[in-house]
Length: 124
Image (cartoon, rainbow, N blue to C red; front, side, top):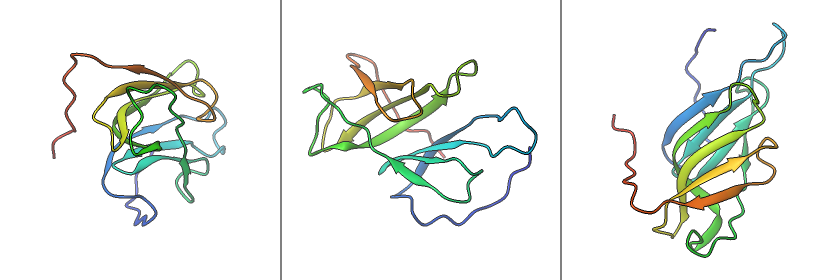
């Protein structure tokens, strides 16, 4: 795998972490997930284009002023099931941190409120 610098202006704010799934066929596009201070983004074409992934929250402890825009701290993929995505974050306008999981490539999400677990953004 090689990396190249990309000037992507669609991200809202700082990109905190990325997760990259390895595609089995050598010529298949790689799916890349990015969690930012303004949402979760996904690219299904190795980073050529990006789409913001809405995250709907029903837990009243996690809802903020914008319950579909997460501010993420970390994101990861299940290595055995790449369609399963995890991230830790909060919704804009909320002080409640949650653990979020999608088993269908970000179409639907479940969340768990994190109590008593200190969360910090990655340092530079």
